[in-house]
Image (cartoon, rainbow, N blue to C red; front, side, top):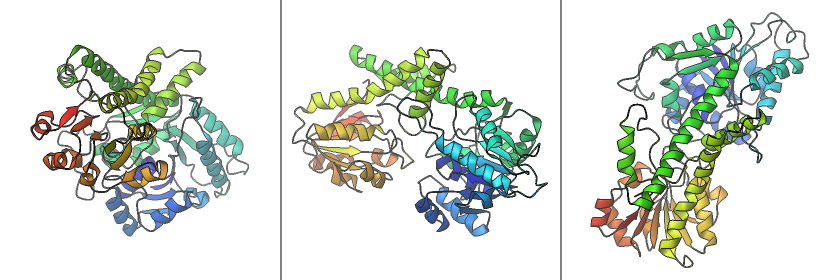
Amino acid sequence: MQVAVIGCGYVGLATSVVLADLGHHVTGVEIDSRKLARLRDGLAPIFEAHLQDLLTANLKAGRVEFTDDHDSACRGARVIIVAVGTPTRETWEIDLSQLESAIDSIAGALESQDEGAVAPVVVIKSTVPSGTMDYLRERLRRSCAGSACHAERAFMIASNPEFLREGQAIFDTFYPDRIVIGADDEEPFVVLDELYARIVSQDFDDSPPRPARPPAFRSPVPVIKTTPRSSEMIKYAANAFLATKISFINEIANLCEEVGADINDVARGIGLDPRIGPQFLRAGIGYGGSCFPKDTKALHQHAGSRGYTFTLLNAVIEVNRIQRYRFLARIRRALEPLSGKTLGVFGIAFKPGTDDIREAPSIDLMRELSRDGASLKATDPRAIENARAVFAGCTYFEDPYEVARDADAILLVTEWPEFLSLDWKKIAGLMRGNLVFDGRNCLDRNALGHVGLRVVGVGR
């Protein structure tokens, strides 16, 4: 099947290379000239496990290509996937400008279609509030001026939200928990059934560069077929629920600090209840990234625009905002005054497995500590260059041992496996102080204690 993917960020690029790897011919549209140049040179502009190898293999096989020309990409495409950003404004409203621009470009491409061409299915993969697809459908109709576009069935439109985890985007595209499709008539369901047929049936091997299939993976993959508004809501509801679990366990962690309980034991004790489950019950300094912060705010604002006060979600957002500053307060109390102190920061990306620093707690922490007069050194396996672009008040090192040298304290902010396997006895010998602030409760407190380090966690 011929597929166009508009937007080559985390979602669009992962979708492009996986669909190409499964036999479709994919043209990715990217208007950022620097990203486009890298893609044409065969270089992934973002870090994701397996992405570079899949990109290389499918470029070589001629199954994927990249352009900034919407017309050529969309011409003859059976499916046009829109995967552009939908950031939140300061008012928490969703900014649809990138999506509107993509829809207008699709309209221009449809005008140049040959009369009688097969109507494409325009798939909205970007995260949007319920009802947005209705608006986009009407915008696409109004934007079309040519006779071909005015035809009765010039295009179809469907909602198909993504559920990808950054750092696991390729894995989650090959092995999704579910596929959700929202449409108002039958034909988009038929077309997308064909597009995803091999993913649903798992009719492919897991030889490299594909990630290995989980041993207990469900096959066939469940496909939820529903209305567009329900499909759009499923995406927001899923992210809001996961964010709620994170904020809930952080609130319990804060109470554990007051009463002398251990949040790790508490989380394990409640997570073994199958009605609760252990996922997203790790206490720490809060969520970040490109999804949870913006999606919880957007859903809260969307509810408000309909006259509904989403009280629970407001609390989730506020707890997450405060959590990183509670961690900061513990650092300040332990090290006052911070002026003249040297702090080493392990981890900048908002989570392991990615170079994404959007809404990363590390950036807020480093800015505040720098204002307090602390001298900062930081390291991250993937995110150093991105961090340099947004925060200059820090010295960055590739080597974590250089970050530890002469540090009064270490702040572990991102739980990269590389940090968990460090020689902490060596780090203790390099440091001037002995405090390690574990913002993710992932370090072995006893092992670090044996080498003279004092670990300060969250809720412990």
